[in-house]
Amino acid sequence: MQTKESALTGMIDLFDKCFNFTRADEVKALGIYPYFHPISSAPGDEVIFDGRRVIMIGSNNYLGLTGHPKVKEAAAAAIQKYGSGCTGSRFLNGTLDLHIELEERLATFLKKEAALVFSTGFQTNLGTISCLVQKGDTLVIDRSDHASIVDGCRLSFGKVLKFAHNDMEDFERVIRSVRENNGKGGILVVVDGVFSMEGDIIMLPELVAIARKYNARVMVDDAHAVGVLGEGGRGTAEHYNMIDQVDMVMGTFSKSFASLGGYIAADNAIINYIKHFSRELIFSASIPPSSTAAVLAALDIIESEPERRKNLWKNARRMLREFKILGFDTGTSATPVIPVVIGEDLDTFKFWKGLFDNGILANPAISPAVPPGQALIRTSYTATHTDKHLDRVLEVFEKLGKKTGII
Image 1 (tube, rainbow, N blue to C red):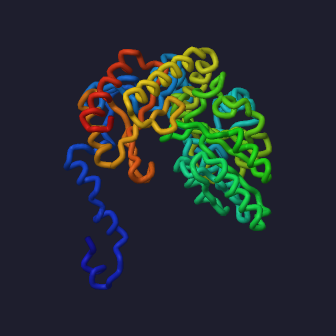
Image 2: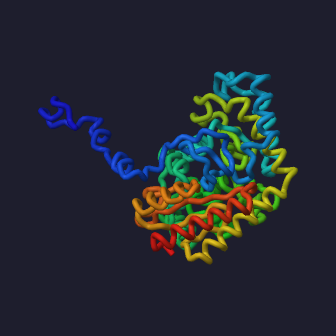
Image 3: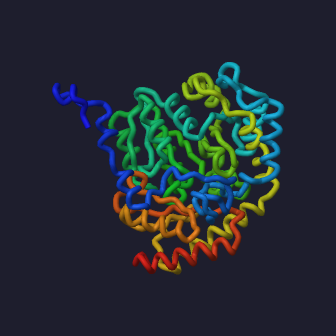
């Protein structure tokens, strides 16, 4: 509502949008509001959600490392040695020897010259894109890219163009138009390796070939791909045997690495430039020692226990196959991220509530996270889900799917 003064003057109150936002309260009144519910247990394949034990199929804990004893022990030991935080940015007093060790390990693991660690994955995209792309440059991104890529583009001074999701013909049309319209500046193409809602994989060989044709650089966001794709878990480029052909690889620690933070890996000169010009790095407190040590321990496990990745894919392939047999629409998913398309927003919330009432926790995604009319239940699977977990998930989905007419 407007204040008395703003009503008299006809001026808009900045907070009008807040007072007029009622959609969340309306959904709460229906008893199907799915957001901001508390979890009161350690993350895992079963969690205590709103006081109830449920099977978790909504996390990004792909390798099941958040509860691994070695990861927890490493984090605890780091707190004992370094304390709880760094009290400063990487640029000044916030760089620990642990950060340097992690960056060197990541560079070696990803087969790049250097790596740089940020405080979050979101910040990594903001800080990398905004400092590299300047006035006169152009960004070309997939329409389904993550919000952090979109916001990084907004912070840059470059022109931003989008192409249809994973459509290489449209991608070439867009990038060709840049050069044909006297676009002599630099071009950075930024795509997700695995798309976080759709669960499909970028068509990297075609994309890189087209980018090179127009003298563009390529950055891949591997948040949902590292630890998952590739023979050694190095992500999308390894999956396609193209590690040397991707200029920059970004990732996050909040998924397969079971921690918090993010990184960018590239040639030495690129990383050195980002170190000295990225405002998001220079003016943010650095990743705490416990998180850093947890990533190092997780990296040890990723390198030494390939059977985790094999089990992850066994579970993912089974669920994708079974959902399709039941008649669910899983879109173009080809990874452990498997969407189940419901359609309308309220129907999706009701389906989510039905899952929860039956002991299953997944994530509802509505527009603008997905196109209007394409609301979905986002499911994701881990290396540590048991057959018993998956049997129960399929049983509940089949029951609800038939009850609601989805299948």
